[in-house]
Image (cartoon, rainbow over all chains, first blue to last red; front, top):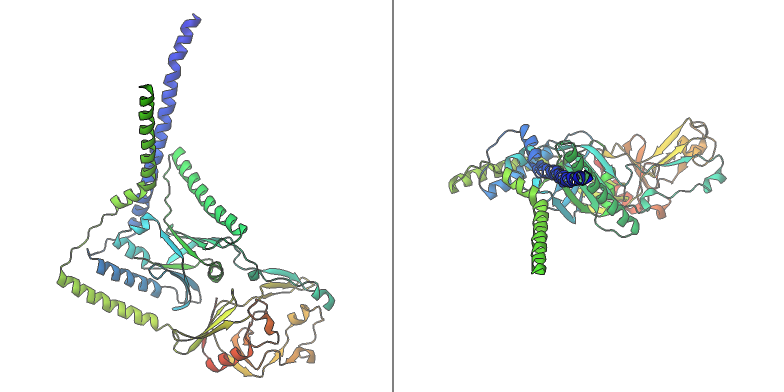
Length: 260
Length: 218
């Protein structure tokens, strides 16, 4: 009798194992399909709000159309007293623009566009970038306003004891993330990691992003939900310029992007 | 024989893993490439030339509109993060050097009722007024921050001569571009919101910027 049960158990074990393996495989395949299709879904999402416009099979015309798109976006920036960010990839510059005047321009040392943006069809490029993009989320490793609180001294003698050092004299690693309302992530980082604090901040910035993406992927896989693709633009410049840019930009700023 | 079979198994497994890794790394790019095929209109040489001229004309109009925004007179740009100024004539830089801007100190009065923020405002401003040999009328915070009692509004102790340098240019709301006695602090964020320049730069800015000239601060 016991031997018979043992035989049955032996037969059941591989079936359960195969079933579990099959389930895992299904979840993995489902996840991979979601992962592969994520940029396609994002493109479809953008396409829904756009019309089809005539584009030409001509590199010269493409290039000049993109320049026109860039100029149109610059001209449609709000004319009120606000500072905006300009990302000019062909010139490798990051700039600040106010009321039609480019007041600051800094050379970027690295620029990387993700595959979806690189391969964006010309008609979608024109419609996406012919107007400024609105920034919905703005975060950084530095504070927007380096406020130092100070209580007034009661006597002139107390004044000498309360000397403070300005924030801008202290070197701080600069890592900025701007997310536009159409979902483009601008990941702007400093180009040098001089100190161990810089290196740590650099590691933390990228590992946080990787963790966030991995979490989003596994959540989508387990819950059978769509995996949201994040089109991204990685930019790199020197820390002082990035500090100036981040502190100059208001929370709800606009970004104009131009690339070829 | 057994060894050979094992080796073959590992080779197959290894190459599958490499292939899988490659597919995973490139799958999104491949999918984007497949899905981004768009209908393009083929153009012949003649049409291309016509379209190119049209587009170039359009671009020239847009460039003209954009350049109309650049001030024709001299204007000043101040970078309050690195404490530098840039004096421009159109797109040409005439002079750049260090200056001092707001310290970002939030001074809280002893009674906790009043507080003052010493930051340089950001945005676009205009020169509203220009003064030679300006006299500084010390506001309340100048006494509070030194631990001194605040005198009556027109008390003689409020008036200081020579501390603002030879010239001052007002950009509104009490913010000035002026000189300083503390030249060693130039390049540092130490002011109460005003922009401090050294004597030579102050003279140049005073002479270069007529009333109405633009000042951009970021």
